Amino acid sequence: MNTEWIRTPQRAAKLLQQGKLVAFPTETVFGLGARADDARAIQNLFVAKGRPENNPLIVHLANVDDWSLAARTLTESARVLLREFAPGPLTVVLPKAKAICHSVTAGLDTVGLRIPSCEHARAVLRLSQVPIAAPSANFSGRPSCTTWAAVLEDLEGRIDGVFCENSSQIGLESTVVDCTGDTPVLLRTGAISLEDLQRAIPNARALEPSESSGAGQKSPGLTHPHYQPRAMVKVFEPSITSENQSLHRSLLSAFEALAADQLAICSLAGSGGAELVREISDARLVRVFPDAAEYAKGLYEFLREADRRDAKGILCELPPAVGIGIAVRDRLQRAAQR
Ligand code: TXA
Ligand code: MG
Image 1 (spheres, rainbow, N blue to C red):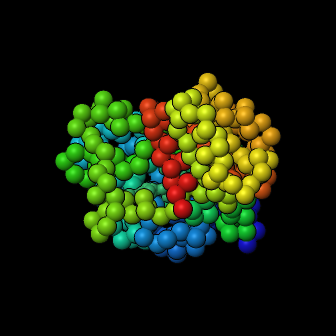
Image 2: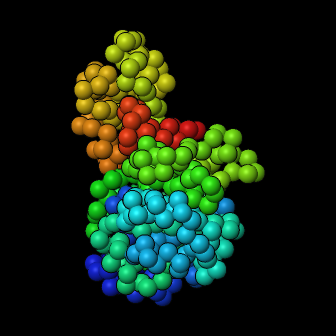
């Protein structure tokens, strides 16, 4: 299959309407779109991504007012959160409307719904005139894509087109909130933090560890491998470096067989990690992010760049657990999980 380089939202929407697979930018990461009412298109999407079929997809709409195209009811908590945070990096889980294919929701009776704020995405969605299911546009298990070049790296020849605009201002996937019950439950962290949610709905809560695994799990996608580059990732806390000079050695011992020039390392400016970066000055790839927001924005490209340069090990400093730093930590810890 030839993957078309698409330059206009009109062309992207036309292909989507025909049941084709088209990647498009959003303010979070690139999405791989397909009609949410077309079982064959959705089947092709799972195959193109190599995605496990029990991991449900998010349905994207151009406007909040169109919610009934994807959801059966708009719960009070969803209404409040959408009023506060949509369009934007928020996904609300609601009872599913009939028109959405079962394969989109992996057989669940609920659907994730998102209204992106990115103008390119909204134009594509508006012109498509149908709900569009769009998981992140990476090969399953790999880091998400924040550039169209990265999308091609993973999916060239496997999808029909990619809309060639970059606009991932946030860089991490949306915050996912289950709004089907009495209290909203945070399923995936993102730029909108639990504290932000609680400012709008004080009893919003995080997922308990017992709810994220086993038969009753609320979000099946949480258990699959995610965000992993080819090279092994190790994460470290900033505090340890400033307290403990031997951290350098203990961290590097995890990559014992590797020379410094086979490593990639990233950290936050002004932290203990930045010191470590100075020590490993001959690393193959070094990135010091000025703040947590820039870390979020640049993380996936950093991981992918490490692969492009054939680094053998990747060291990443965990940012402090506040604001978007919480979501960066979550993605890093999953990237390091194997
Ligand atoms: O920012 C984003 O959300 C991006 C852009 C493209 O919009 N999309 C994205 O999709 O990250 P994906 O497929 O990579 O992640 C979807 C997440 C998974 O963790 C999945 O389990 C969860 O949303 N999800 C989707 N539908 C759900 C549902 N009905 N119930 C619970 N979790 C759901
Ligand atoms: Mg994903």
